[in-house]
Amino acid sequence: MGRVGKKFKKAKEAVAQKPHYPLPEAVATVAKHAFAKFDETVEVALRLGVDPKHADQMVRGTVILPHGLGGKSKRVLVVTSGEKLKEAQDAGADFVGGDDMVNKIQQENWLDFDALVASPDMMKSVGKLGKVLGPRGLMPNPKTGTVTFDIGKAVREIKAGKVEYRVDKTSIIHAPIGKVSFGPDKLLDNARAIIDSILKAKPEQVLIDDLHAEFGKSPHAILVDFRGLAVPAVTEFRRKVRQAGSRYRVVKNSLALRAVKATPLEGLAKKFEHTTGVAYTGNDPVVLAKVLVDFAKEHPELVVKGGVVSGSQMLDAEGVKALSTMPSLRELRARVLGLLQAPAARLVRVLAAPGTKLVRVVKAHQNKLEGR
Image (cartoon, one colour):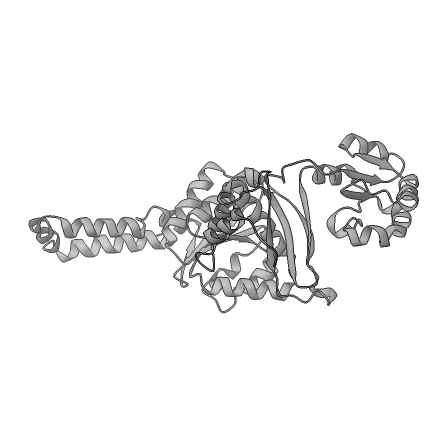
């Protein structure tokens, strides 16, 4: 290994304090200890545990990051014909043409662009450029949305910061999530977006196994229908769920039904229909319920469908609302501590209260938890 500078050594020592960092802390640490004089790009690297030699385990796709990538927008070349030429120009493409562009690349080795979009009718010509574009990751592909008749949409998405990812031969995906100047919050949003996209793109059985493991460790969960919720609102919703110490996933219902088998969430199987998202936690379910119910009040498009507590207590939508009105574990601990610190006479009065009164209080809390 070559010599490294003092700033690099200092940054390395700062992040070597523990072997693993939770994602929010990792992003904040990277932003804090960046030392270059320019605005550095932050990347994520994910080892997927797949074998890319097999076609059914190839993972690739695209995602539009909530906060873009920063820096200069990508230079986009569009190879198309007819009316689509004007559509590409109107959408902001940097270079537009047909066979003339293909010939320029072939004859002049011209590669002064960052992304290439082609209409399907031009792929016969573009296909000749495979040996030139392929190794550089510039070959258009239907799976990444760069071979399409909707030229305008493809160009706008690339300009907005759409990221294309593909697993390499070592089963790792490297992808940018923005600039250091974005700050921890925006970088975390972008990281979550690309990680979620990659998880959805993983082979079905691998994804099911991952979900099954996560659901197995999460005795509390709440399902929601998010149809109509705008992208900024979804981003904000995910952030609030994370702040509650919980996770939120959206997967195909068919996969979710297979993943919840033999887990604490199995009782929710009947509710996995339409566009379903699942928020789950191994922490206090009351905190999660409060977040979801409060968010649904501000955004009626988010509909709470039901949930499960402790892996056995099933709740309908009203039950989740009742759960959200209960005191959290932190609040209960504070009340107990306050009671223990209260004057002895007050504690005696509480303990001396008629048994029937105490039973009624406990029963009322139980009924509220069950949504009665």
